[in-house]
Image (cartoon, rainbow, N blue to C red; front, side, top):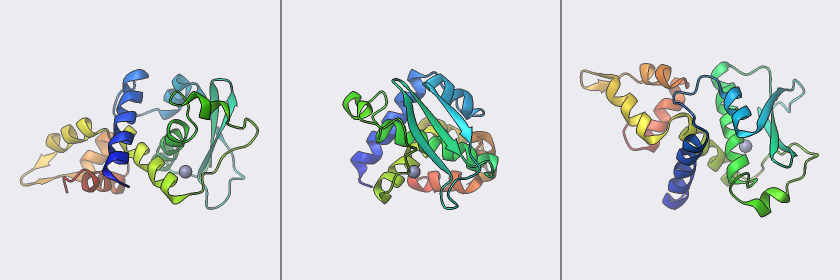
Length: 172
Ligand SMILES: [Zn+2]
């Protein structure tokens, strides 16, 4: 992903946080989905390689389907990833023409790896916004290192996700 795309996605996540008055850390992502205009459904017949899908289900509403077999962290990050597709690739609140063209009858599984990477970057930016991530690092400095387990606990993400975010943002 190039620097401009990275910047765009992180700025967009910050705008979504502001627009929908989302507090970080995100503890209850289902209520945030509702606030944005959607709902989450659990579907136990998901493709084995696919944790979540999304579809438009009304003029200004959408639904996200997730596997019921996900861990709590997995569930939250899957939903955040689908929100990335919503804003970045379906045009919800960002590109009216693109949103109008979305098919209401099918759940979308996004194919290209570029779109997958973008949705995952959005998820990281939503769950661990740059400013709050930097604050969390400072909060959990322990001697000359940062306790990433505590950073992850504080931000309600998996330790692997927190470490990855730290690397992507150039802190680790
Ligand atoms: Zn995806």
